[in-house]
Structures are given as structure tokens and as C-alpha cells.
Image (cartoon, rainbow, N blue to C red):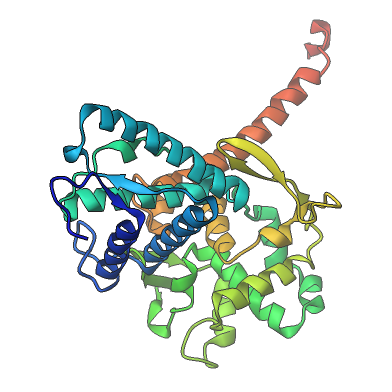
Length: 366
């Protein structure tokens, strides 16, 4: 399509030509981050998903999708374009929420990608698409962090009866889980650990790692139980821990959790446009999820960080171990979670004080 001064808008066919161009330029490295680094494959996946869902929406709803070129519009046409985008945004998000049954976080990713695409058209192709897309707002939801408490972690580490119940593959999975709950590394970094990452000096073992994702160096002194885990596998393979896929470990961790006496039902909520909806494992029976349903490889890192914070390790030291930046929003989710745990127990203490009977003054005399 040839764009002239008389072109009022890009029809959907041309829009998707540009969308495919965006994906191609990002995939081949022509389009990079501001610091020159390549854009992650997971981000490119969100581009594909947004393109596909937009195409499905247009097809299923017979929506006449277009992108206006504002410098070619009259004042009246600009007002019409504003109304058009408002209608599009409402119908597209309705489709995502109620037809596709997505929740706020995922819809937010899709809408952010759509806004990025409009910015791409404006800044990298020279098409003046205006500022309408800035009104494509997103809702965010704080999905509850599922972690093991220090008491539950202690049970995993030291309970021999549990260990005897587990089949061999789950004993290995438990070792990895316990180690991951200790060192706060990302799963990808755990699976890459080699003997060169383990150092011994001043009578202690240290784990030194440079994160694959952030290129951040971390170091942590290992407790005896973590060293014992590593020594089990030290001579059996090139890596310090048994190496399997994330999916394999996710399945094993869920299976492991079903052996735990604290695998209790947990009410799960997700939000659509900020409104909470209970989510059931079995909607017909209104059966709630349990710990086993929530546990994943990321639970290890979350547990390690929150355990350190709950047991009063200073935030800056926890960040040094976890590799989070000082202003990391993700890290402060852990801080808030740990603080809410402290607040909960503080409330219980003061609630007990309020129920204690007043002691007559005469009884205080020695």
C-alpha cells in the first residue's frame, strides 16, 4: 500500500504488515533495547500473541480495525477517531476478558504491547498515528506470593520420616528445592551451577554466581545442609545439581507437595478490571486449589528471599544475594509480603494483650 497525503488511515491488512515487520526486526536484532541489548524471546512471544489475538478479535467480531494518520485528518475526523479508539479499546478488552477469560496481568501485557506497536509506528516508521493509544490503560493485579514459611522449610530439610516416604526422583527434587530455597537463585542459574561456582575458604563453602538474566554477580555462604546436598551429586555429573527441564521440576515439586501435611486448600483470586473473582480447581464442585497446585520452580527463589527478610536480614544484604537492583519493584513485593507477615503476628500479640484481665494494683506489691 502506498501512503499519500490523502491517506486517512491504515486498513487492518496494512497494520499487520507493519506488525510482522516489527516482529522480524526485533527477532533478527535490528531493533534492540535502548542500552543496545537484544530484546528477550519472551517479549517477542508477547508480540506474536498480541498480533494473533488482535487478528482473532477482528475476525470473530467483524470489527473494522484501522489506525488513523492524524496529520491527514480534519478536526471533525480527529474527534471521530478518538471515539473510534475508545470503542475499539472497550470491545477488544471485553473480548480478552470475557471471551478468552484472561485476567488483568495478561491483558495488561497485551495492551502494553499494543501501545508499544503504536509507538513503533510513530517513532520508527515515521507515521503520525497521534497519541490516542496513550488512553489504552491497563489494570494490574498483585498475584499472591506462595512461599514456604521458615517452619515448613525446616520440615523439608530435617524431617527424615518425610525423606523415607519419597520415591527416588522426589528425593532428588526435594534436594534441589531445598537448595533453591536457600540461595535465592533463578532456576536458570541453578541449573547452570558447576564446580567452579563452589569455592572453599576460611573453613566455609561459598557459592559464587553471575546471573544469566541480569549479568549480576552474587555470593552466598552455604549452610551445612546445602553443602551436603551438593556433595551428593558432585561426582555424578558436570553440574552441581541434577539437571532437568523446568517442566519436569514443576511436576515433581507439585507431586512432592502432596506428601506434605501442610498441603492445605488455598483460596485463589484473580482480577478482571480490578474486580476480584474466586478461581476454583473444580468450578462445579467449588474445590479450592492447594499448595501443591501453586508451587513452581519460582517458589524456591521467593521462599529464599522472604525467609531472609522474615528472619530480619537487612534488605540491602538480601538484594546483594538475590541480585535485585535497589529500586526493583519485584523485590519490594517480597518486602511487602514479609512485612505483612510481621504485621499479622504483631496484631495477634496486641489482640492477646487486649484480652488480658486487668490486674488489681494491690497484687503488684512485692
